[in-house]
Length: 371
Image (cartoon, rainbow, N blue to C red; front, side, top):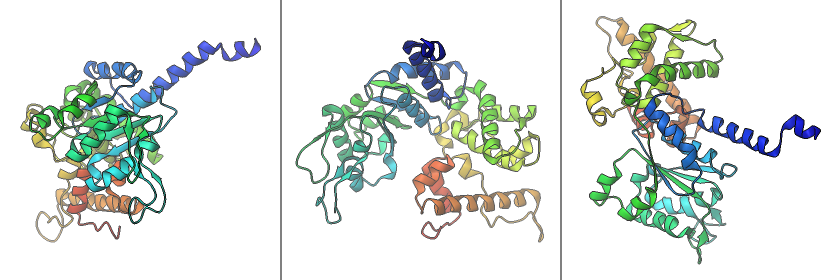
């Protein structure tokens, strides 16, 4: 009885744990816009199912955060969440990556090795960029979904797969099915439960809240006092088109904190130093986000050899561009060095799109083998 008074009944403890799990799982999904809240409110219900989930949305809208929330709110939360970047794994390696192999399956197979499906046993397998799978890989994934089985390379029997599959894409799968570039039967297997992450331009009321959240997060990571946003900075951010969505806003605010070092608030010049002039609402970039897909992270940096504004000295804009380019080259090279040249892991730590990160490597002529 004393223990019950101190810690509550079993039902009360379970209710408290459920609430804590929900709060932690949804903590990174920041926003109060109605369209966004409809998605957030649906996540616990979808998480309670064991059916596959298809998450749709533009680059940078938070598809992986949604997938992680689904996992942590499900009955599988005590087992692994295994993300797979389908676009980063060559087709001839994908089968081994997903299903593993047995000893002797090929020349260098000296021992059995579990694939990602086996590693995710009891948990969630998150397949990002599902649209990039080849027809062969799509067929093998279809068997996994239909039969709940898979066969490691070189094995003589199938194994039972105890995973929930969550897939994500920023492509129009219906269009790819019509063009016969994506299997219709796989599409219908994946599209049992569907989540559509709204782009940032459709939830403008959340931009200020997200920006403040990212600023405080960046200040905490750098160990510096918190900063506020000046009113004209808020106006500038709210008017932007944000083709890179929440991820782009995160990158901009992280860099703004860096350039506002020592200042108590972030002013427009701090933002302008890290971003080209914002496209305004109603611009072509707003009307056709796909046309604006080179992310601002990559598009706003001048080459390291940007010329000055005349004479031997650099003008303000050229000096700014050069400083940013030097910083960015150093930052990208350091991440590649840390991750032994692995672009996927480096891009994930930078919280940017892998393709955009790859363009930065090419732009700054960074040799991955020596980074």
